[in-house]
Image (tube, each protein chain N blue to C red):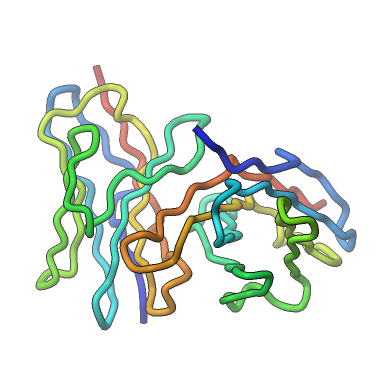
Length: 109
Length: 116
């Protein structure tokens, strides 16, 4: 079965501390993994996709096929990073995205 | 920056009534989607649409649901005979192409549907 698991509903860290948002997936084949973010009162927007291997707003995510993980990391959290973060997998069909439950990240001053 | 526009932002309806949610995708995008998120639950795929036909639909997208692109700009989701469990935030999204690595979705702000 295709599944995305984000084990933490809520993650609260202090400003300047490192952040790691966990994402594990279940998929047989070559997955495409994404991180979407939703800031307060804003719409869902793409943050990262594994295929680009880029860093956006200081965030990085590496696809680890051995551990079936795509954790999102940032070495020094900023208050503006507070948001809801969703990990998503592009399924076999190539159309639909399969979503994790989301992690609410709160950066404390 | 171009946006996906959704109307209404919030609709309250009585159980059994028909609802139409409207979306204006980004003008040069070719692929259109509807997702929904019931409060406290995961975002769920409903349907994808390309070249004036459904390209994929989920188990949720049963005969109660239909999509249409009536005039080349709007993309609508119709829910016939709404049920209480249809209460959710409905997101429209569009993307320019489908090939691997290029399937980046742009989402609308969502339409909140409340069924009483």
